Length: 145
Image (cartoon, rainbow, N blue to C red; front, side):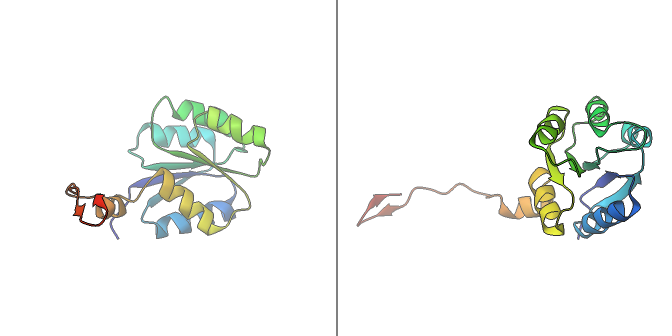
């Protein structure tokens, strides 16, 4: 499987970051980790990233502030993965720059599906993109399609 690029997992819980890392590595990403907002901003400002996952409850700053600051240095998809489960939390997360929002605990299938939606695999996209236009076909019994 070809690399889908570099993913930055911003998560202070080692078990959660490990799980996310295993899933995203399996999806073809080169996964890097940051445990604090400050560390994440430093890494993001000097890296070509394809995807960022972001926890809201970081030890040094609110994840929404991190998302806003990230938006000043990158336009890559940001997936917020958090235990904050209220509708208002999700709306505020999206308003702060997140591309998608996933509530903990989550099933690995959910993470894979959201990642595929916000950061499509270029190989799958290439294979599913038509290389030529279809011409209308006449059907004697039903007219032109």
